[in-house]
Length: 224
Image (cartoon, rainbow, N blue to C red; front, side, top):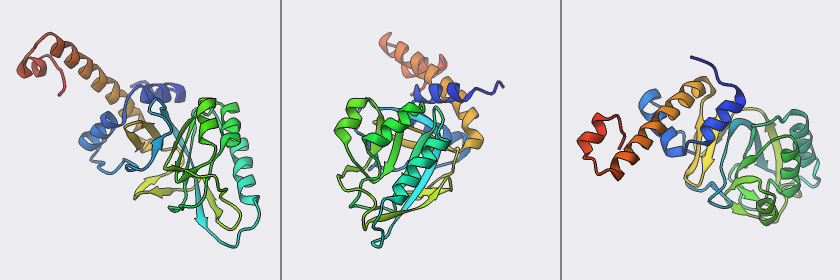
């Protein structure tokens, strides 16, 4: 089996969709909890993202009075980001801060990063949308994460969002149907199986339009 490049993996998974990927992980790998839950959504339905995770975790801390942690996050992103990577932030379920804004998106875009995933608030959503950056978050929030709200606890360490583990380098794929995590150990297999499944679904669509019966569809290699 040919090992696809990072760009091929990102392109192939982005052409798939979360339901197909969770079907594969359910049936082929017995991984039944890879969806990040119903709250994380794209700013608009057309947004899609796929790539290896760049993980961050913030925790609530009312003693924080400066923006040093936000600057540290930006510095690490500038130093370590590369094309296709997907920044993902565990905010510890914070409800009163925005952890990402339009300028951070501009930094990412300059490094070939097309999207980010926040389990919490995002600032500047209109400007992020206008910039074409694929932003996934829970809610809009104008308040910055620092200033008596949160501190940066870790970068590039395993995190959990809704009981789903995300390790640095695990793959994320998201669209309007949700965001899923693919462990990096199986991403190549999932990539190829997703391509096969998409082909089966194309066959099924063709047969449906031709008026085939369910038996005929399954016999022809279709998928229901």
